[in-house]
Length: 417
Image 1: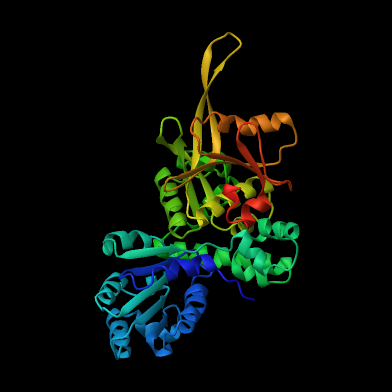
Image 2: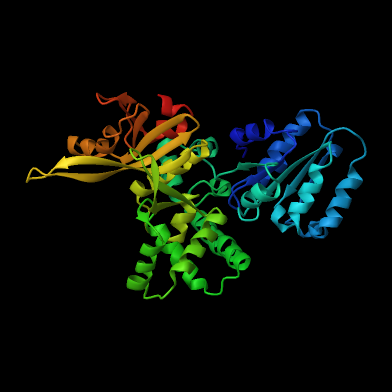
């Protein structure tokens, strides 16, 4: 089963031979290795690159264990460079390479070498690339399958596909599995045996139960405003745990570093400033979130919001939670300020969109409620309400676009419809 992942292949194509280290990051099992070692490798061969000018080393394989030594891998690569033509070096799971920053910096000094590396942890990759490579690291972040990519491989209509996607998410291997039991078992095991163990080992965590409890709390509150202090209060009142605020902060950072969760900050639209806490947390893959809760809290309202957030990130937008103030007169005739929330502000260069995830608009009152924050934004950037119902795209009298989730996710140009 071939899933093209053209978006990411195009991202690699435009970065070829740019004298920078191409770093392909993403959560484990999202398809990074497949992208580099299958899709991009095939592209290089089809483009006329000789096979012996493509150097592939998968560092997570035991047979390549010796190449985790920085001197041995540099000697090995050097031994394969026999002329002045361009060579392409593909390294998988580079965080397993000792002193990898020095190795990659050394490769940058070879004129006819173009380097591509994959990794699963942002603390060892994205963050260090900024400091260690001084602008010579170029990151391509790979997400689990978008709904559009999922439907390329799914054998069924979009409605059954949506039901599958909101339950089991977009990790590529789940699409190939035949039964619900297989998918649920795979995601549950993957979370506990790969992601959690990786975080525990990398960060030397001793109190594993506290980490597991924290993950469950965040998974139960996707799309809700939260912060470490609120989570601490939940631990004390519900779990009867005395976990410290500092520990909670550290654990959240570990989950973000492993690409398990992402954070959306609050932005004051009229004040043009970030507010700080509380923030919203979203899972990079909704199937993993559901598996974490034993598939007991598959509420489409919150899950749809998480999926829209991920889609915007995949399209390259910086995504914030919007806050806009509205002046209202109370029964005594006194004006008061009320804060209204916009689910997402999506920014990309000079482009901006205000987006509400409404699930459904059954009546005029619900429509008024969802539009309230949008119509109180005074600028002219596009305002969109995404709903689950199947409708034709329409533009109402307030200039707000209303679009179905299917059109929004399946059409790359949906935000301009």
